[in-house]
Image (cartoon, rainbow, N blue to C red; front, side, top):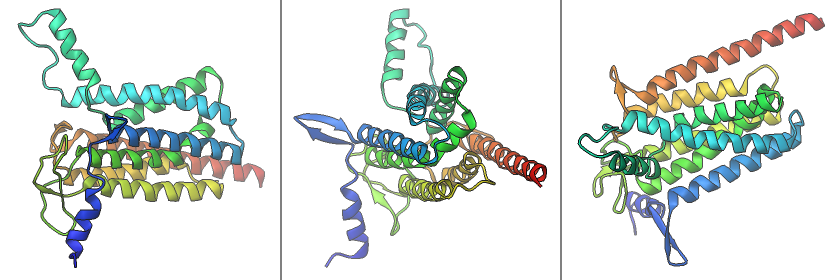
Length: 281
């Protein structure tokens, strides 16, 4: 009989394929997971909009299209800022540098926080232009964001990017065909830990949304909870392509800012509710 450790590694091995073959073509599993995550985000958000009715489902859908464009731009831009050491090839022509930049822009490398910021700006642009209440729109969409991220981290695990530190224990995984992670080295599966945290966060936010919890900003709660998860897990990451400053990664500094901003949103929502309740009493 297989030991517990061997069964665990055999099970996880099914998910550790960077590519799958469809009709003779290799398709990145990361891309498939991203598409599934985006579809889940759109589907759940539209359903939530129809359930609560504060923002038309059509507006939520089109807002997410704007958010998707912002997400792609922001995630790539932050990746270039924090991980690219050379932005200009000295001694090379303008044409060669242009080709170099095309490779940087079209090859892998996306940063979630950059995507989150870009998506928020894209969604805000839609709400401003079409006069949609941004607060209600964000509260409708935000519970499904961790679900999108859950699929994204499964894609990271399949590709081997965003990997954890070297660790040879019962929870370790060893990649054989990874694109980003070192192959043949037992590592901590940080991607799966973050995926689990996002799935739990999705469940909590969905419960509160469906219960129409009135005294709490779901956007603020999401930022506080995810920032805590991300800040903690960054200590267990083994990849260095994230940028560092004063012993903390760029993502940890952004987590601190996100935590602070989320706290402000929660406090502001609570104060507004108190003022409203006093006025009605």
